[in-house]
Length: 291
Image 1 (cartoon, one colour):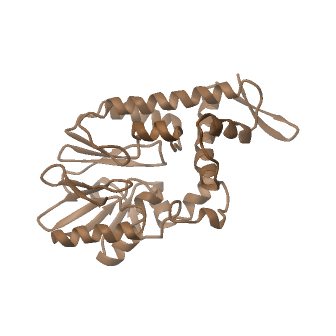
Image 2 (cartoon, helix red, strand yellow):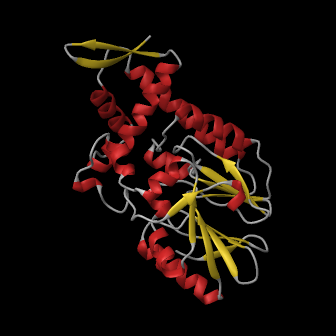
């Protein structure tokens, strides 16, 4: 873990729970794509940089999930590097309490205010094309989170969290998604991207991403169909969630309730917008029902 892997002359990634991209912009300067999940990840990154004699100029966050921005504060305090994140992700990075608040749908209790859902604050600036090193390109990848992006450099594409490995999908079943329609559109676009190498954050680097992208699409379609089937008769959200936890052999915890629950709400919105589900109110309870 935390091994530096070279892909091209100037493109690398650091193997970690969520892969960290590294771009060498000149002989002694580098920038990072994300920073890992916590202060310890930041320390390990710093050790790699020091061993190579590299100076960290900037961190470009693909999105604001805690496992991608957790090393920001440590690295910024140690190196003075600038940190950038796109759109709403910049606000979440500056105010990490927004992530558990968003997932829970209210003020998050102490059990949700931990490093896996809430990184430490770091000074973040808006990520736009004009702050990137020469030759580095932004790739919009919305869906998994609000304004997530990927990057291309030297024909290597860093794909952030826009897809998961087959092993992860088969084990956990329901991956986190904020906007299902945008997520599916992103995966269709990813299938058509041409590059020498693709580096997803939570899957192996590879030369062809289209098969894995389609596997992720198929999993989304499967979950949407299961939810629609569950809603043949009017049913409340909590009961839908319970049935899905049983069907996918998931174990309910407070954290999983928030993560999977938020995703299931996104599926319900998606299916309602498509005209496949409707909402009705009975005895002061909101129920979901298949059209």
